[in-house]
Amino acid sequence: MTSPSELTCAELVELVTAYLEGALPADERVRFEQHLVMCEGCIAYLDQMRETVRLTGTLREEHLDDHARDALLHAFRTWAIE
Image (cartoon, rainbow, N blue to C red; front, side, top):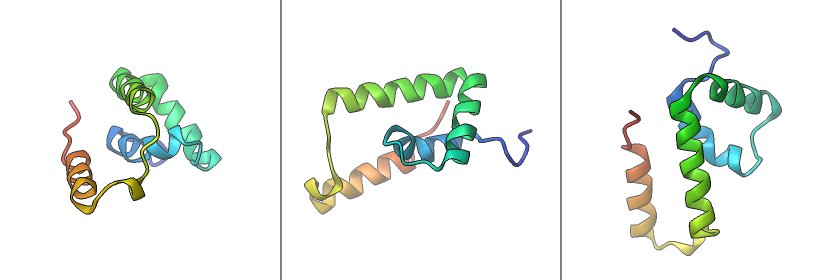
């Protein structure tokens, strides 16, 4: 069981974009990085996200049509973490 200050895998997934953009507040960044120390699955997820960003470049929400945006949001919201 996690303590209130520990980040869960699901919370990390929700915060990964802000982390990669350097937009997490310092206390959240510390929780994020502490979770990575103990979770190989989340390390792999973060590495995959970094590689995705590297391969696709910068894609902003305003570049997507409504259908594409909704499809991406649905995919990420329903993605199961193993």
